Length: 315
Image 1 (cartoon, helix red, strand yellow):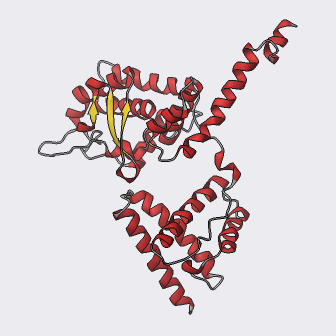
Image 2 (cartoon, rainbow, N blue to C red):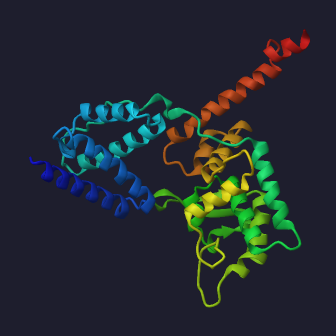
């Protein structure tokens, strides 16, 4: 097969898979784009070996991963790309285009289970206190009320940035201290909200959002820009980073992981955290077992009769 035909064939196969993700699986545009980028990168790799996606073998996948490692790509990113390939080849098998999955015996990088970055409770508390002071000031404007409400919601519910941007006013049920969230694949879940988040959202809805709505404009979006438009993902990222203060580069994703980490540290079970975060597979949530184990070790050292800390204190 000529090189031009290989490239065209691979591109067509990737487009069909992305259409399947978008239409049948209901994935959001950003997720579909991420899959497409990863698959196009793999296609480029095997085209250099005079091969096509539907005829790839395990050596192609392993060689692709080794190449990424050789270029300094983090194991976590490599694991994500492998996950995209697994989904792609499962689809090809289901569609009967191939009779063997080349990813089936490829191991995920062990460091995939490395704990995601999160903030200390004190760091989150300081961030929320700063924005809370601004939101509770007598001259607080709609933007201050909005930003504080977003931060409270990100941390209280462990929401993804895309979930924040797509929320509508009708998704809030503050009288019941909960919110309805649409996650990946348009799967819905109910997220409980604490008192601080409920109060911040109530103040934003009553005193902040009305001033951001433009006359004649109909917007269901919960959080609006100064022009009355729904907020973008990039804008929320920038706002969180600015609110984190000096010395800390926080992100919405770090607040999501902080929510899960702090819950596990305080004794929450993984199934509850899985439900809160909207993880389809408990394996995704199991990275937080590292937190539980670390916390357990600290408690043991502090309270066991032969714990190191107690022994040191007795000397």
